[in-house]
Length: 154
Image (cartoon, rainbow, N blue to C red; front, side):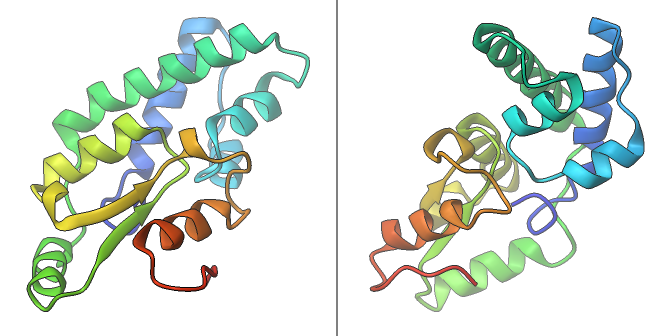
């Protein structure tokens, strides 16, 4: 989804920066670039340490995604050609799915902002997997949901 349907990178970076300011722990661009696309838990643990209490980890991840959605509703736009491609594939009978390390609320928001939510038969989010990217679990689960035969990651 991120970087495929929408250019969400700048909005995610801004959300991390805002969160960093809120908690007094700056996030630098180099760290963001190395971790973009990973599950929020892994990003926060790499940033603030693996000894964070589970409740604090969840609180920080939830807050970052709230900030992201607030910003994204105002700023996200589809990548050039994405909407006609999705509509064209759907019209030709292709079954469409999304796999993302982001939370369910982010995936649903993006599909709704693009006006294409009803065209997707399946999606898998970071809420549903034990291992975030680069592990292929999110993609293998998504393919399985489409019931396309043997699931594999590309």
